[in-house]
Length: 297
Image (cartoon, rainbow, N blue to C red; front, side, top):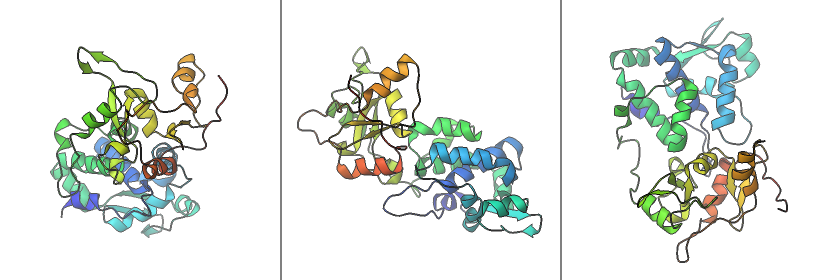
């Protein structure tokens, strides 16, 4: 059985590029627990809080419940659920999962395969990360679910992923003249830019193209916050800052809150600005809550 293929083809609700990472997040969490304990049975009532937090932090802005993937991941052949009444999920309801003592874990065949081939776990995790989340979030997401991945587990899996265009970074940084489109940071060591990255507006994992009109040159801090939904891009290419962001320090006010309503810096004349469709996708699928109102300086 090709577990990598099965991992790559989890059945997820999909419409117009909407994100539904419920199953990948539960699967990553289960792999992390298996890596730590060797078994990884998860009592729903014991892990509900963790799963809810993962969905809040890495899921789409709309409200959702961890009961959904706990029940539905069974249909993908990688997960099983049992209750006090015996094998099988009691349904999608939170109350039913709690009341019946529902517990889930990886199916026996997968547990055997992971013990037989330890590197398989890391490769499966990498598929889940690459197909559902931007690279800027991979490290912290692994920490959140307790996964430790080795460098060798980052191999290209041609059967389950398309190839990235290695030219995108240089094209985007050139279009924005090697400065952060949010704050103007343009640090270099000699002739080499440091701390500047090419961010996808519509995530590559959700068919975002490696094109300049889907890219932003951002400093490392603002790239991470953009992918976390703290920042967005509004009509007129002005910066949106989420009302859900809280920062009381002078640094948080200066580097985040004060950017609300500012126009993007760049791109230079002749370079294509961010396409409206990509901005709209990011606003609906990544940006959290409502934008802060713009106040006079």
